[in-house]
Length: 148
Image (cartoon, rainbow, N blue to C red; front, top):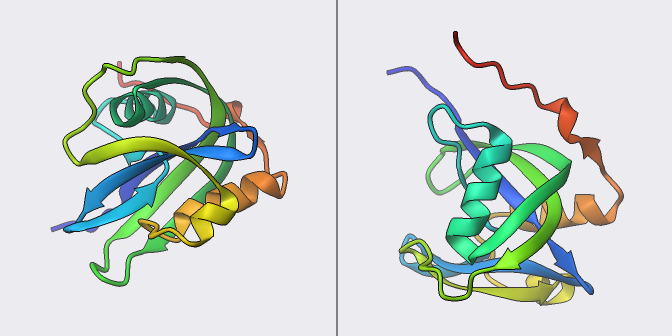
């Protein structure tokens, strides 16, 4: 079997010092994460983060910049993740929309509240801290080529 990393995307959305977060069940534990998920076949990274944000939070997300690209190996599973983190804005909420099965709810938390929350991975706070540190990369950094 060929090794490959799990490619994921995450969305950072900030409103008055609070960040849109997801409370979800992962491996039997309730944890906090950004709206995030796996890249699907034939999907661009930008389309993936738009889709994942909607599926997990019921918010329509518009990516504006990339805050970082992270490689992390989870100690518990030894799985390697390659995560592209986007910052952007929410422009419409569908509160009646059904969320993904493992999602409990979306909520807005400050960075300080996140320091005391059970985070899904260290990438959650790292992405926010990079955003707060002013790390900004244009979406044009990403190029997606389709097979003809």
